[in-house]
Image (cartoon, rainbow, N blue to C red; front, side, top):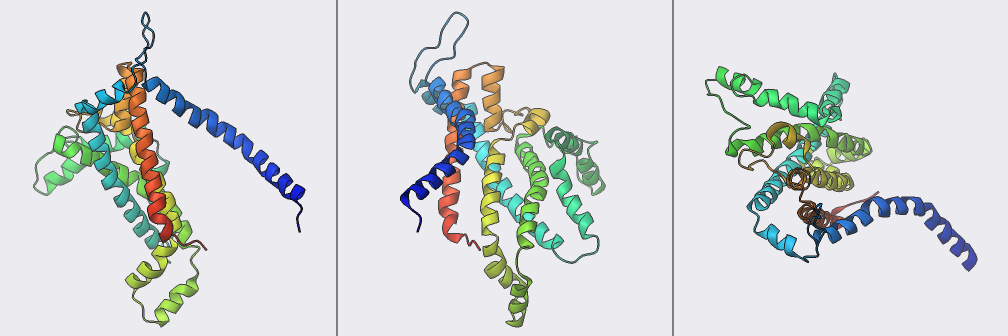
Length: 295
């Protein structure tokens, strides 16, 4: 039986191993978050006007800011569409390339290729696709008898165009995790299900998908974070237009803090983004915890 000193020594040893990571996490994550919150309670300091404590005035201003409300709505809609679509497409691709197919390695590489491309490169590729009249999409549409569409210049289509581009880029990344999880499933489970006469859909729903839930939780957390930190594509393609129809929350924070140089209001917007991400992450853990089966 271990003595009290042995257990104490083991605990101290464990905490010492965690200390470097804890210090880095505190120095580069928690302390900046606290400093950002404190800055959001003040005005933006100017050359001849120091920062002045205003309490929650920045947050009250936010509730009356139509651009913020538009960016928040755009981001929520963007997340509600891109996250499920990327996850479902990633599962389908993983199931497909996990089978014994001719050219399976090429298919895997083709699905994963968009992931390794830089964000700006992806934006330029899709900018060519969406160019009115000369873009690939309009050329195909013209050959089918349809007219040209300014996909990035109309309020009704610009956000959807960004969604399609994001799904194309992220589905291959999530596919890798699902493919790794599928390769850990024992083949005996499929053999047993076939002997019992279970259909492929029933086998996936009752056996495969529950075994994929730990991977799904990991993928969902990353997908939520990615959906709220997108700024490269917006800067490179639309710059939030037209009429803020494609403005997302992080892009609006970037504009307020670094273009208009209102760092205090930008700090308040950042705290809202952090709180939203924390609530979504906690909701995912509490909702999915009972559905996760670890082996």
